[in-house]
Image (cartoon, rainbow, N blue to C red; front, side, top):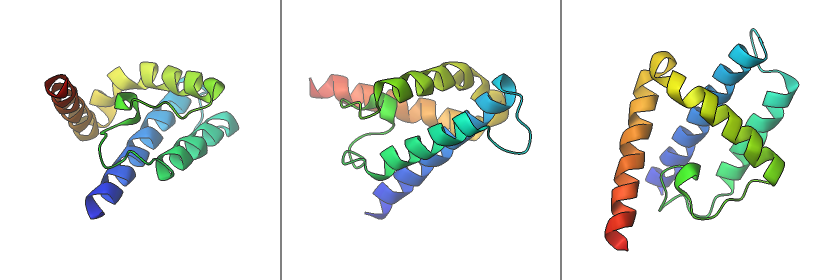
Length: 113
């Protein structure tokens, strides 16, 4: 159970970092998130809090069920597409952990098929 809660908290922290980076660069916000990005962050955290698959998945991008509403899913995709490559420079440890865990998950899924 502790491992699941740790994964949940890491995922929420990572998505918050990515949204903050996106908002700072794209919306030129300083000292906090703009209202649009605040809503997205709250939504993403709420989805993570309610995720029934947290024990078996690494990140939402690796999940077989997409629980985001279509408009929020498109917004988070834009954030991920922009922030993902830049995370290596702004949050290198989190970025490397994400890449490693994603690759492990993909290997595990390929092995299970």
